[in-house]
Image (cartoon, rainbow, N blue to C red; front, side, top):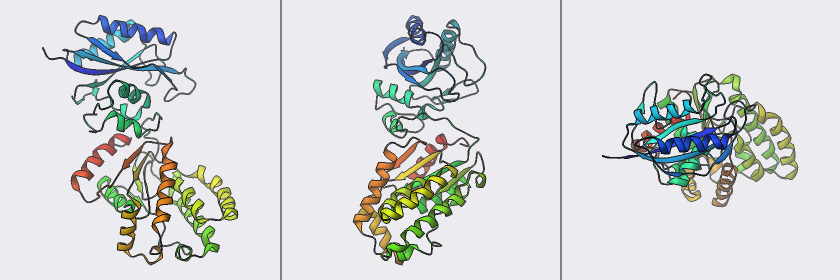
Length: 360
């Protein structure tokens, strides 16, 4: 009889949390036709919704079973019931929670069972447990390893929020293809696209020509234009919108283009404006090499960009890498040498993006 490898997430935030997890694992071991192969380390995590709840203990178990996913799911519910799991409010505290994360490479979507777990790719505490057991394990819908999915979260845990604008911000160097990808995504999602105000900035060309005195004017123009574009009241809740820039990147260019006095004044304005700007729910980081970006810059022949040097692009790229390395606002999908004009590549990206949006 064939046996399927499945992964189960365990969590508890009521009573003796460690004891409830130990009891659940023991009941799993005692379940007919279920063999517990390995268990990840237990980690403590904050609740996903109500911060007044107690913290959780979480781990992941790898099992083998000849049971169907449906039968295994029934057994997990029985174990929860035997350990006083109270059902009701979605995010309520619980003595034990047993989630069927993966069942081989099966994909199930029904009212009572969804496999893979619909939001496992947003939970670092789940992915870290899976990485311990099998870092090359592949999500059967996203077609990415748990190692890759975990790297997108930078240790954060996220929930889908339909009460927020579904803002997708595309980050990357000058010439990386941000505007092109923004147009493609907006067309596919049938949603608004918001573009950086390069063409209307009256100071930008003079700054790139070497006029340092206007650098602050240029950065403040971008700052307040983006505030106008990205105020939450300007964006529709629960609906996608794509920008060809990441607001937080303002700091990258400011540090490169402004002198110390200008930067100090700029940062005072930034600290006032930043809290009033909507956060993205997803960042796409285009990680194209500086030389490739420079070639694209020369091809598109914007006069004010032609004096940009590779060293400047290297500094901008390093700024993005540093700024997004510990990014905790939302997941970051990193794309290297991404081809916006390859249909298979775009189709794959769209399939993945839908899993990160509450409007998916």
